[in-house]
Length: 390
Ligand code: PLP
Image 1 (spheres, rainbow, N blue to C red):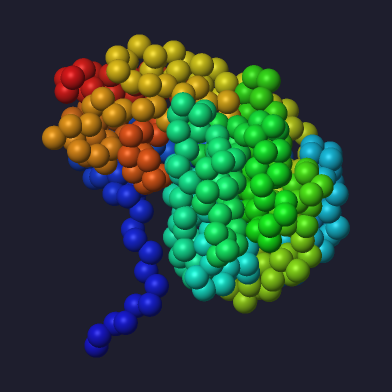
Image 2: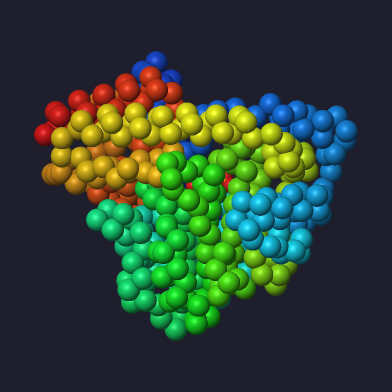
């Protein structure tokens, strides 16, 4: 039998690293994991209890395709409280993680041959999501000199009659950059008179440090009917495994996302929705404590990385990632960030993610969603590994 597979996105390179980590650990070799893209804290107790109550109260069946009205209402209130945004219930869809909101929104908006502009480095799933939706990714390079912020002139140069969507992601994975309001305003000026949608991935919007402020393009009236805001319970509430996120945006797109989701998954998980309701309505003390721990870890990892020669550091203002430049260490033996990351793993027992997976081969991503001890030991080993190659 010849299998004619029509769509098979490439295996993620992060899995190559992850499966090598597993092999090493199976052989009893300790690995210091600075590659993990999820909170290391447990889901808060009150949220877990709400999930258990949902099970015990038999709230264990399909729900409405777009999510239960109470949760959509709680999301609308939260967006209003935090960002002064106003959404009707019909403009909000609860989805199977933020990822499905992004994928379904692209499926709803993108027609064959449409172009989708993606600032690079990017969250690794965007290009494959665009391709799976039938569109063509067009990359907008970001640079560390520019603070990894999209340059309006560069954006303008990438726009063609085929441009259908621009994906924005602030706070940004993998760099930790946050787009200030004047940068978003200058992008809005370019986009406002064009028929282009803005897919705004805001899943790290509560993980911000110092005086940084989260600004959403949806807050700009000129784009009000073209921004699809995507968020998630994964990162803020340590709920990655509960698989719950949402989109908020124009009613026709919300309707399409809801319909796509109901055909592909029936509905988001009922139990998770009750837990998420508690996450939004309940106390946020634990979340505030986690944020202050992340901030201390951010300070610690930056301090340690600054001691490594020939490494250029960009200090993240949000997320739990740092994305240092490692060009100096790329050479014949390590032509790309992939070989360098595998070397650090095999020889030093420290796992990092090669920048290549995010479309930027001159950097590596380290996660500080782990303990101080792991951060200290991991960076120490990385420093030693880089010292040996020069
Ligand atoms: N967007 C970004 C930038 C991410 O980093 C992630 C997860 O790592 C997601 C979206 C998807 O999150 P989830 O599907 O768990 O809500």
